[in-house]
Length: 125
Image 1 (cartoon, rainbow, N blue to C red):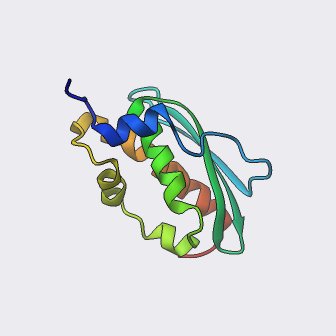
Image 2: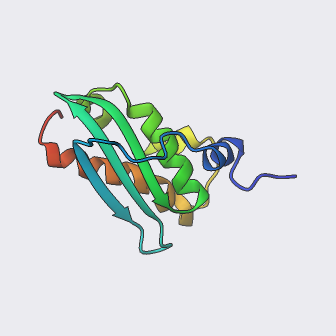
């Protein structure tokens, strides 16, 4: 059987990491993709300039959910300036899948939402 998006996407879609709400998030941001209807909420606990915890909830496709799962794993423990250095290409590469151009916005929605959330803090860069 051929997997449409690759094993890594399906693994993180079926068993997403950090799919929960945080008890005391420092910052929360909702993201929406009007092209496909994906919705994602990113929550983070930020202590000084370090992301101590990151979590998400989503009503989204497999690609968006997997991307949020991988992203929240990756950023936990990083400084805000390190997170600001993560590129869209880094996010796409972490999915380890060849995505059709029309699905790139699904994969990048969690990162764009996270960036918007961090911009509220006005720290690091």
